[in-house]
Length: 317
Ligand code: WQD
Image (cartoon, rainbow, N blue to C red; front, top):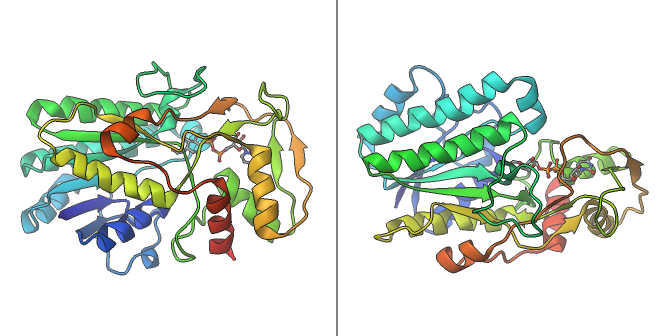
């Protein structure tokens, strides 16, 4: 298939690109390299800032040259804290970028889209395993832009778009050093970077209503997530799509302390974590109900926490 992949020089996007090529697809990457890294991928990227005024015209040119079968849209800003500081920029880039992409797709009759959404759309869920029908309310601008993006994908059904929203849980791990998550923005890369600097990882909150008091998340290996994208493209080929939104997780929760225990093992470093206060806005537990994606897409994560943490450590060393 001919795929247009936005954000393909990013940590997740480069894993999607690598897998798509291994599966025999031809992939064109659009990335403005604002956070992406060009040498993650073996070919030049088309440098388009999707939120810019000229983007529809530039995307149109690309779509005139190549008749894409589907678009996988990952290009976006993704830092929760930053989204609280500069919400307008998040709405401009995440919503404006998607609007421009949809305008170009509509003009060129490209009717299949896989959209990178997030478990941040759920806000503070109270279910042990949160399912896609849970009426979540995002608690930060980042999550709001992702939920609004899902609405945009849904509305575009009016002109014939078939869209899938993938709600990522906590993505980590790496297939290689080259594709490693080098940004220190999430627990596993932050803790690895701290250990490499001789510092101790920090646990934000040890008094949550969880068995060990630290927050529980659903960590999913980035290679499994990449696989889910290609399965979603396959799903859009079916004559009818019963659902548009899918959780991508493992259905297994792990606490911050459990993650750090795996890191102790993977690194061989006998560190003592620093027990700190809660970080504002953290739900105590966020774990995916994976029934829908298993049933409809046949997706099941093949890697567990041990492999995730070990691959992240190996990629960073
Ligand atoms: C995980 C847990 C922290 C750092 C965010 C977004 C979500 C998705 C993934 C994009 C929490 C704790 C962290 C540290 C810690 N992003 N922690 N010490 O907040 O679950 O999810 O990233 O779609 O939308 O909200 O991920 O990795 O920041 O934190 O104790 O140094 O680790 O408090 O419980 P989070 P995270």
